[in-house]
Length: 216
Image 1 (cartoon, rainbow, N blue to C red):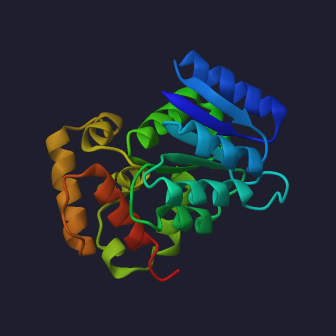
Image 2: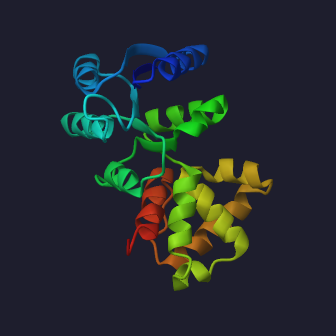
């Protein structure tokens, strides 16, 4: 799997390259600025891009904007964005086109190799990988919402994992219950939130995130 990596800090960029290579990813390019990222994405057509939000020369959201422009030029290009801080706007911009193949993680997550690599693979496969902290903030902001208040504590656990991009099987494994039990919980969650039931993992993640992001 070919990866274009964009990170302006040399030590972190080098560490990410070594980590990804250790998990059998091929690094097509490792760049440090927005213009270099745009060029690499256009010319190399990677399987997935791993991009720091803030890149030179602007050091604002140049990495994110380069990645979004590349997705417009090549719809469905998988992009995993890394950020130092939680910015819900970044998540909204990534999810705006309603397609999969997107992820948003805090940089702290890259120090957990398995979690980081799982997110890269999930995004590359067309799925969605959202940082648990982002999901927690969305849930907290909507905690007074009547439909969310109707969820049981277990349903809220399942909802949080679902919103991160986890499949029923993965949620069942993490909560140490049967997949059938998780299917029942997800059915109840969708009914209480007034969302259409879907067997497609990515569609249901997008539906949940759209619900949580209402009324921002």
